[in-house]
Image (tube, rainbow, N blue to C red; front, side, top):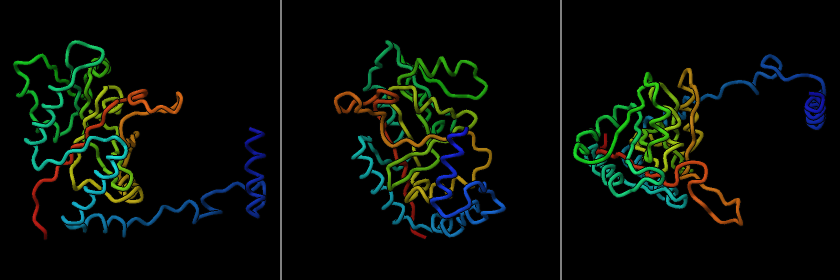
Length: 244
């Protein structure tokens, strides 16, 4: 504690402030003031279809450099076809049985994946908040499917909120992460993303995901899947829409 106090006092002195005065909301109102996000939110809500499509292009372009497998679909049935193909074409790494864990989200439910595997050895699990076996089911699953709240074009990031029925483990534990993101939920940069997050009350936690898990700790050799999913498939749902 003494070292921390000394360190902070040195910073205050360097800034020309009294060393032992603590910063507080009353003495530094501008420092602690919440940013005015009204203009940012207005900008987000007033975007045209053309502008949103441009953000999709930027997101996919930047995601390509981060080893994100990106797909654009125009309907939920088309998204379902793509997800089914990914499940069928990928083999589990640590299990002989194909288990898939899915967030309790209306867009994922609308895929109706349960209709597609009635004659195949694929087990689908949904992260219902009252299911006490979610941890075991997630560990057994080789694919996790989520519907991120926000996509950030500038950094190719999807932001996954932790909410009832939508644990962060779904996007972190399985070997493959499939993220279904609606075009209207894509913003330009992190400033816009934080403006939207500030509107959320009672946030538990959230995960910023920019590509699959990767590390180059050993001899600067890039390895995917060391601390999380080895693949990230981003499906952008861009339903046909007329300009207003």
